[in-house]
Image (tube, rainbow, N blue to C red; front, side):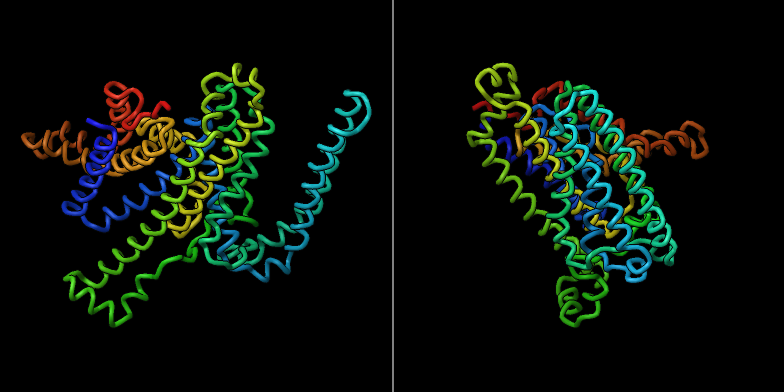
Length: 437
């Protein structure tokens, strides 16, 4: 079977699975899964840029995803005037003091014409004094901001712009943080890089959970504006009632379907654009150079390639794509919940998407995003149906039957492991392997 035919059949099979969910459960469920599959595919593309192109093991995926969610707040939420009056200017001044401390420390370390020992002590002294000054300025402002109607606001808010702008800003936020991480950690060996990125991801999420003045912390930010119509607005129009009657679907259900289809169209445009750009980059001289560095860093370095610089470049690009996906996820959810970003759990899931789809192949990463998220969601109803079938001959009050039914929901992780094992056994390079050029 030729490669294009195989790829078409794989995606067609994924489409059939979604159609089966629509017919056997509901089309609302099928479209909800489709939207999350599209976002997962974008996230998998970001990880594939880092791992498939350059062999960088980023275990901090959820940290960059959370930065995308932060961008959704900063861009779309309306500003809170009372909070800005209470301490907004002082909070900004405190942050500027912190940035000035970082810039000064870098300048001292690189440019000061003194001995290494003197530079170390001067840099440490500047860091400690600068941090103390930042907290002295920032802490009173934070207390004043968080005291402004904490049940409703208690934070500064954002710029009140259309939330789709946050998709770009989320990529920028993630890229900036990735650059800072890469300057420090990309000289490490791959296993140490994974540990470092996982730890930094935890730090990012811990910061977002606890800085209420910026993100409301664990109180969450709800009601983010939408880039698509609201169901209630559709239900209030005469033309939509006529359309729902013509199709033969209740108005409430039809409005939910239309909203989900609008989201799917927007996400599909982003996915296609990122896929096209990724493919152009992969097939360019830059992409060939990155694969050469991935396959043999020593040989690439001997040929004059800046291995660390290129690693930093691809790390920033992949993280920016992950940040875009994070902003899309917050847009779809309509809320920002820092506690939902669990680095170990969901980073593992994204990596399984890349491995199952085919590391180094952008089309494979998209397929992996669809397959893994589909089974992640559908494992519970499939497991419950399977347990009902297995225990159909048992007594209704049988302890074994009750135990199996109660634990059917926990088949999700087992299903992920089973899918991963089957793919690695029968297609070790993924469902759509990397094309050797």
